[in-house]
Length: 118
Figure 1 (cartoon, one colour):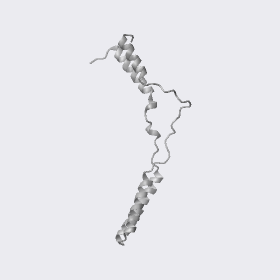
Figure 2 (cartoon, helix red, strand yellow):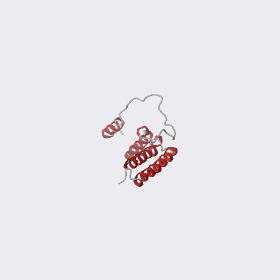
Figure 3 (cartoon, helix red, strand yellow):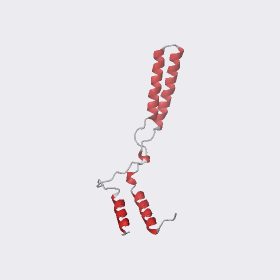
Figure 4 (cartoon, one colour):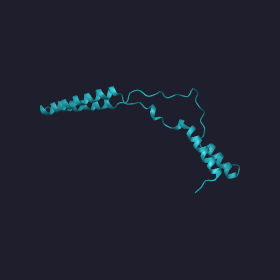
């Protein structure tokens, strides 16, 4: 189904507005990233926890096994914790923008279109 010239113009305008209105989109690059050093330390702690857990099993002392499991949990937490942001800093607007209704321009355009003004 082919679009009329008016519909094509409205669609192009909507695309331009969507591309320019990127402030509503979440910037995934600004998320804190995994720290390689923390991940390495976390993996080493996990390995140490496995060793303690195996020691508890070998010597048949449940308390040492529980301590090894706890050590592994701490290692996982350290390895997966995201600290700070190593990516580029996200720019902040210098002055707060006034809130605007995002649909008002679409509603106005629809009203003009239905009235035959477009």
